[in-house]
Length: 168
Ligand code: MG
Image 1 (cartoon, protein in one colour):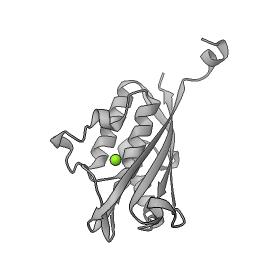
Image 2: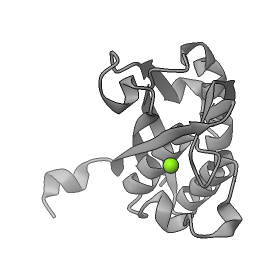
Image 3: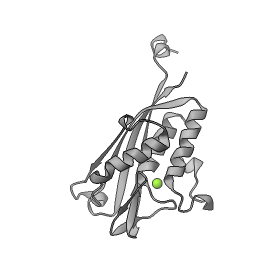
Image 4: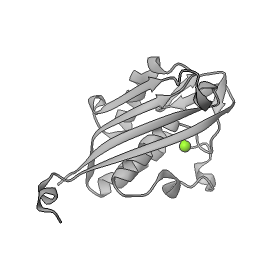
């Protein structure tokens, strides 16, 4: 290995993206927070697109595949599952390999509902599940200026980037 790379701290970056479509319903769950809405999100689980993107970023950084590999949507065990359970499981996988989270930065793309007011509660939920400080997490929300499927209120997109460090 290149000696410069060898001397760097053992850090790994990961990114995750998830999309869920709207369907009939009266609420969405984002970042572990139940938000009343005129539609729900179509999913095998609770449809928490933000946690799914975060889990994929965490798994990707650790080289552990993706959320579909660990929690297949063909498995009835995961029907309607609280995605916070999945996040806590992913954190256990990382801890078992001596990875700690340095920080995570996330973005929600949603025309509706308005999510910004719920961000502090989402941060508290995620920090609790991940065993990190709220100051290690960031959640941003944006609309798509009414463009594309997000703008037509057909679904929600979430993106996450995480940095892991070896706990050595
Ligand atoms: Mg998903």
